[in-house]
Image (spheres, rainbow, N blue to C red):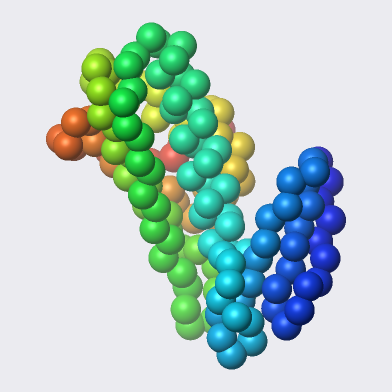
Length: 147
């Protein structure tokens, strides 16, 4: 994996990964707040990685997903530098004809075996999750990757 990151202006950068461009920026006064910050992109990466796992497993389990939203929130250590994540919370919200146990298993596998981004972040701070199926909370847990 290789990425090239080019300065555009002020605090705006454009990264290129496998031919795809990603823009990052900082909030004012240093930047223009024209794109997510690098730290936000880490949270985006967690969401994208685990969401892809869950959808792939739902397809494998022949479950009918009609809607999937993954909400995330990161708390940060504010009193010292660098300001790193101290906790990540994920809320998986799926709708459709889905067996409860299949969805719980898919999320558990993502957060214990498959999601490499979560595996890296979980070494630094806890990742907690809750699972909602058709509006009802059906489970919760914590990322648990082998050391």
